Length: 147
Image (cartoon, rainbow, N blue to C red; front, side, top):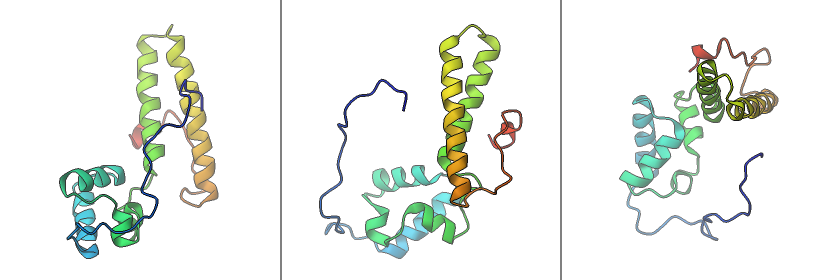
């Protein structure tokens, strides 16, 4: 939102999403792999990267019809906090730690403000979608419980 990035150059998925003919893995095997990797403590995005790089599975959704997060929720292996919110909270704690020793770093202070406003927007969204309880509140002092 506040970055210097311009344009929309990026990689694009294929126009017709179909299961590639060269994949020999069944959907049940993919779900078992997702469960195994989740029990090892991997997040949903890490699982997708591992499946792509190590097992040659380009898209879990094409094979199973479900996203990695949906598979984790079915197996009751998903985390209590959404992954993007957790990453932002980690970034905010790192920035706070940096600002304790570098209190004149105004660039980092601005970054912390932007990060915390993103956190508050995400919390509002997840409360509307019922992924977080209504009484959940972002408190920088208590973030160390989650991070």
